[in-house]
Image (cartoon, rainbow, N blue to C red; front, side):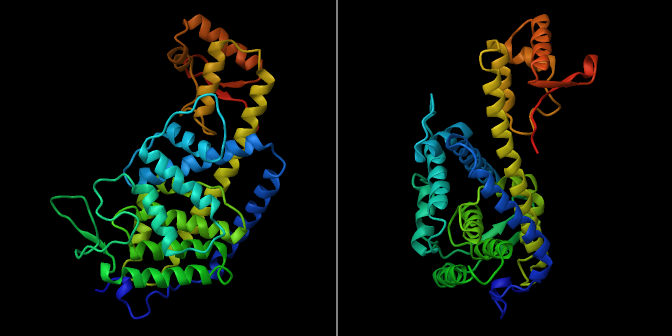
Length: 366
């Protein structure tokens, strides 16, 4: 049975864009609200939002591929790019600085046409110090088939085989022409969904296709709304990785891709809602710390900052007295007194009683 790129109609993907209309409206309304909201906040809060979103995207996109990045180092590299000064910046490794350069370049160049040179530059940013790749910054040329294979040694299975290296440049030329010409002819969500699928089906690089393919989709979203879209698609895709891979695999031998475009569109809409939740969280965090400045002891401040570092969802299962003691090394009586004081000050609220007592950040996050 032929792969999708071997079919006569390749690369004409078939789906019904009308079915995406409700999601498209939801995304565009949300993006408009985000833009209006961002214009009202202070520059430092906007910068915090950029750093949080881009670092989340970088960390999770790498995690999908089985690579771990240090979030703090990645954030430091992103801050450096935007000229954001902090008290202490952690020097990033080559992996973190490479991912930061990629994310920031995608942000800065969102409105520029896609080119072979741009894609090569992005690949170089990711792998400029990789010693295990024969080809960095250019499309693959190896004669062996580019196959996606299961990792089971007892029964390996080829999930997908991409076009041979000899066809990559011509396939990518056609992809780039499609990407640039479709900007004003397709809806925002369908263009992003097809762009990612189309790119992954070509699999033009020796490595890094998933990471670059996801930023290609984000470039499509940004061009669709006329400004950089600050969402972390990869954070949701990592949580739903099995569904993500299964949705891609279903398209391997067909050009009927309705399920894929609906899945990816839903991911985008949810990722945008999560980004807005993060933005509100950052603003509420700033308000709380301003109000409580000078009214907290060092233990309380340390725990609040630790809670904020967990993001909008906080500690799994909430903050307990035991967790407070582990963070501060305080005696139990002191921890109980500190926690009661934080509730009285409005920083936390309490649920449950006795051993079921849990504490949560008291933020008005939508």
